[in-house]
Structure formats: structure tokens, C-alpha cells
Image (cartoon, rainbow, N blue to C red; front, side):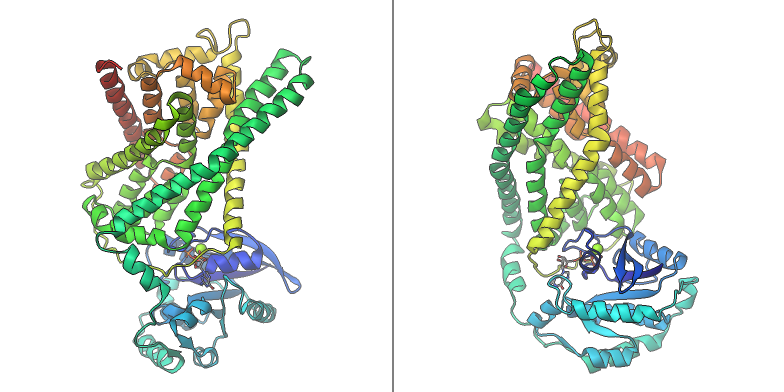
Length: 595
Ligand SMILES: Nc1nc2c(ncn2[C@@H]2O[C@H](COP(=O)(O)OP(=O)(O)OP(=O)(O)O)[C@@H](O)[C@H]2O)c(=O)[nH]1
Ligand SMILES: [Mg+2]
């Protein structure tokens, strides 16, 4: 099968083109370094099946960041029939160097001048025919996002592929001997084919940035935007969530209970009280999660997230991190795993490790579910926003504390040059893709972890069968007992202990298992918990859930990204220790004050 690879600098629209041609949903975002791994898809081009590979963005074929090594390793080990080199037309001055390297290597390449729509707006013109002639490679103008020029690119690709032959790079480093002629040749080409106005026209981006990147108003504005975003998620999400809860309750009472009324206890209990209640409780959060990711996608896609890096850079560098670290933390609000992988854009290992140590403290959407749930059950409605907000404060505080404590150990020497992309509003199609992506991810986890988790919790709380469910005589009770010397001092009882132990696998299991342990769901579960727990216990439980290791996937990612067991263990031990300490201080403090 023939193979096509998409190559180009970061944030030029490779994944957008990939999604268009393959119908797949590779992650896109207005931020350099979104794609961090190879993603392949097979499509029918003309009459041949072809594999198309989306690669991470690279600045240079010699580069030594992890992203660049991934690309080089791929090109050295896999024969490729055709390279599609995607450039950002507005930045052609800086991006042509990569094309020159490819040309010098004699690789079969088509050059796509992407974001032609933006270049036009900025008044930048490129002569594709002349450029093609001078490079001796086909060149086309394209707008991958809106589809202009896509048909032509597709046709050319089909045509070129017919005579293509696979090539593989033997060692790239040797072939790319330093060549001064490249520089002068490139200048010559740029002079003859590109016209850039001396003063870029006053565009929307610079007008917006004069406000949003304002020296002193910028940061407060940013936090205001984030605050309003979270408010909006709850204002829109809460009624949806209540709707789903109501539907699940009604369905159980009207259909499932009668249907299983004569089934043996084990079947009914496992299916209804175990799987249906457990998974159902988690599923009620799906609308909030989707909204959450849609809003995050808008903030990320518009390019506002890159501004956050700019605004926070000064502060972050005092903590031994840089502006990108802050963005990774915000991305971690969605899920820690992609945020950890996003650190691949960093070139110094020590900076990467420090950032990776900090990321697991960012309050991911799975933990958010637990907090929303417990807050709604235990705290009066008027205090709920404040309680949630305090969790975000603790999340930041523990992240910053970690950076300060470990910055000596992982000293950063990497200079950070930020590229702030223009503002871009996501298309409807991009938002749909993103929403679907998150649902898909959620369903994946649901089938992998949540079902298995709630079944196991149900069994543990119901064996042996001749004692009351979830009582101290059951297996779960015994496990809870074993941990009680550690968990009693932080106010966590046996039932909560089981939820915490399973939460180690994935935080989505926590509320699912609470539903199973208490044998209830929805409003009933909340009432029962409110009866059995006071707010000090509940808050201590939330603090512990926030700070201790997020989930198995995070641990696995920490291990694979750092390639170090020692580092993974350090992160584990530190977050567990800190979680216990913070909960202990809070719980004992609150009790000492008479709460
Ligand atoms: N205006 C405009 N924006 C585009 C076009 N193509 C892509 N974009 C936007 O550019 C941003 C980057 O797109 P991606 O497809 O994620 O870029 P990438 O090259 O895969 O980036 P990395 O994975 O980080 O290397 C996104 O916000 C896209 O919506 C285009 O033709 N015109
Ligand atoms: Mg990409």
C-alpha cells in the first residue's frame, strides 16, 4: 500500500487537512504542538488504497525535541511515497527553510500553501507557479479549514501518486550536510515569489490583542473569561444533567424494576444496583463533560489559550516553568493525559519533567464530576459555587507548590520564544468533531474502567451474601478496615475508602462506586450521603480526591513520557503524601475549631 505523510511546522493545519481527506478526527487546535504522535488512516485515493499519516509539527528535520525525533524516526523507518508539506502561507518567510531541506534531500513532495484565506486578509501574496518553477516541486494554494483549493490538491495528489515510488531516509543527519547555498537560494526564491506588505494591515487580531494582551488588564480579563466559561457550563449543563437523571430514574422504575422483579437476587442486584446505577450515575455527567470540552475547544481554537501562555510567562518562569506550562495546566482541566503528552514540545528534559510533575494536580473533568456530585449532596446550593471554586484554588496551589519545591531539582535552561497565532474561530464542523471525540473517549473509558469497576465494587460489597451489603463484615468492609489507621485521621470512613481505592484506577469510578456502595442513585443517594457525612468529612474527601494520583492512565503516561520508573514513583509518592497531609491538616484543623 502506498503511503503519504503530512509534514510541516507546528500549527500549520496538517491535522485539519488530514481530517478533511480521511474523514477522521485527529485533534486540531490553534496552538503549536497539538499533534504529538503519529496518526494513520487508510483511504481510497483514485483507485488505490493509500495510508495517510498525520505527523507532529516540526521546525527542522535536524531538530532534537521529542516531536522532531518522532518524525525523523518515522521517516527513517517507513518508506513514504509522497510527502505533503503544509505551510502557513502568512509565515512563508520562516517556513520555507523546511521545504528547502526536503528539496535538498530530493524527496517526492507536494507543497501546499495553507491558510491562503488568512494570507489574503493580511495582504500577503505568493506566486505559486513561479515558486513551483524555482523549487522544481508542485505548489498549490489551499485553505484546509474552509476547503478552498482542496479539490485541486486532491486531484494533483491522485495524479502524482500514480508514478510515485517509495523512498526511505537512510540516516538523515548525514545527508543534511550544512549548506550555505540553501540560505541564499531561499532568499532569492522569496524575493521573486512572495510579496509581503511593509506594514501588515490593521487586522482583527492586533485590535483584539491590544485589549486582551493589555499589560495590566490582560490577566484579570483572562480569569474573568475563565470564570464566565465555568459559570456558563453549569448554567447550561445542570438542567441537562437533571434531565438525564430523571430519565434514568423513570426508566428504572417503569421498565427495569418490573422486568427484573422475579429474577434471582444476584442477577437483579448486579445488573440494576451495580451496573445500571453505577454507570447511570456517571452517565448523568456526560452533558456537562461535552459542554466543558466544547467551551475549552473554543478557547483553545480561537487562540486565546496561546495568549494565556503569553500573559502567565513571567509568573511561571519564577516557578521554574514557562508560559507553556500554564497552558498545559489548563489543558489538564480537560484531561491530564493529553496535557502530559503536550509537554513533548519542550526541548529540555528538566523543564519537561518539572511540567509533568505539576500537571497531575490540575483538576480534570473526571475529578470535577466527583466534586459537583458531592457538593450538590452535602453543601447548601448557595455555597456550591464557592466550594467548587475553592477546589480550583487548591488545584493551582498544589501545582505551584510542587513547582517551587522541585524547581531546583529540575532546573530550566530553555529560552522560551512564544509564537502567538492569529485569532481563528472554529467552524461548526470542528466543534462537532471535538464534541464527538469527547463522547467517544468517555464511552471508551466507560466500557473499559467504569463497568468493570462498579461490578467489582458490587461484588466486594455483597460478599459474603449473608451479611448486610457494604457492612464491615463484607470484603469491602474488611479492605476499608485495613486502611482505617491511615484514613481515620483524615475523616474518611470505610465506605468512602472503597470509593477512593477504586478512584485510583479512574476518577469516574468514584461516584459510580458510591452509588453501588450506598445502594442508591440520583436524589436518593444524595440524601443518604447527606445523612451519613458532615461537611468536614466531605470536604476532606474532596481534597484527597483532588490531590492524589488522578488515574492509572495518567500513571502510565507519566511512565511512558518520562521513560523513567523513578520519576513515575516520585510523582505517585509525592501526590499521595501531599493529599494525605493536606486532608489531615484540614480535617484535624476543622475538628479542633469545633466543626
Ligand atoms: N484560517 C485558517 N485556519 C486554518 C486553516 N487550516 C487550519 N486552520 C486552523 O489552524 C489551527 C491549527 O490547525 P491544526 O490542523 O491543528 O494544525 P497542525 O499542523 O496539525 O498543528 P500541530 O499538530 O500542532 O503541528 C486550527 O485552529 C485550525 O482551525 C486554514 O486554511 N485557514
Ligand atoms: Mg496536528
